[in-house]
Image (cartoon, rainbow, N blue to C red):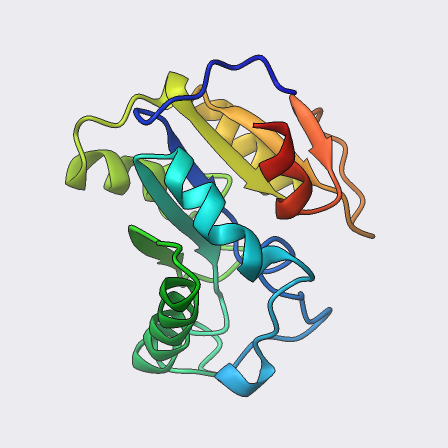
Length: 178
């Protein structure tokens, strides 16, 4: 068990690819038919959602800047993901997607904190010291740390050098710890 005293005032931030769905290495989810929930992730959402006031997805999606998909197409994928999560009793409060190029000076793209600032603007009662960022890459963990969140690493084949507060194999494993 994690001794973080999590209650209904806490906020959960989740990366998408590699945390919620299977990541397509050197590719992108460009159609919902290619969106596959990670093992146990979908089934865990009802329980995870009940433990947090807000649940946000913060995802880097340069596929839009690369013109592989439109903003509308990406929004449709996120809408369908949210519907599937709602069907099992879970919730996503809002999805934030950074659509800039990876090598630009980004405001939104993690590890920049733009998506966190947007969430705080829309939901001013968010307290980042009572928030958890769950990700599978250095950029996810740096984003969480810059905002003062607890960080959780979903261990994948990705090389990660940033130290997380907790490491787990899946969202289901995290759910059992909190």
